[in-house]
Image (cartoon, rainbow, N blue to C red; front, side, top):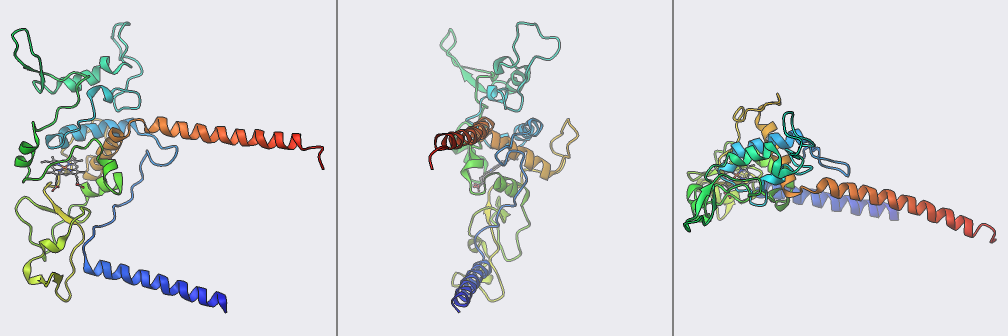
Length: 306
Ligand code: HEC
């Protein structure tokens, strides 16, 4: 009898929860839950895939860096152990006294920095003037805009956020960034977008604000109409098939670009992840061995006490 009532109560609670969920969906609002992806770096033994990191940097450099800064990443970080362009030893033909595992001497890192010509302000020189020079491995990646005002002016008054920590700064983390990049959709016909705005079901927002007036009554959608999930943002879909040319034969698709750039941004936000996980695993092993020794000594100490 008792078990019966508990079961009934449970069913009632679950039904109520399901019903409230249904109501929430019908009312619209909220955003779609990010699609869960399988990442190299998830789980206690997860590591970054250096090839994915290199492709991800390429996508960032070719596409995202036109609007987004990456202020907390210096070129030399790209050549550190665990980074996309780390070299254990120099390529053939380098003098013996050069150590390419040192990021400042890593030829790939130097070349990547040198692409940013005249983009770093240095000085003053002997005449007291500041001057522009190419980036060096020790410089952080130059930002696309000199200041926030310029950034907003070029982007429909929206500010493209710095991407250094973005995979940590948003709920859903890398799954969210991936879903946002791949999830753009044509806005539903019930919605009116202002110029320079784009609909994305994964972007947090309130689409009730964007509904055409004929579909709304007193702040609620009229009978039979639902408010779509997601929000509108001022970033046009940045990726399209084929826009970045990969050298390693990986698919040149929006999905692959999004996956690679997200893995790269995850590395940017947490370059020491691999060391952290290795330490965690070592600690567990240590604790297991310690527990074994303690158990063994306990048996030994108490062996002849009855
Ligand atoms: C043409 C400029 C432009 C390009 C190129 C661009 N973005 Fe954006 N991005 C923006 C703007 C503007 C915003 C702010 C949008 C808003 O808040 O309405 C933004 C916002 C974002 C956000 C934050 C969304 C949120 O939750 O607030 C992420 C993540 C992002 N971009 C990632 C990327 C990545 C990754 C790339 C490269 C594949 C990229 N963007 C390329 C302009 C750009």
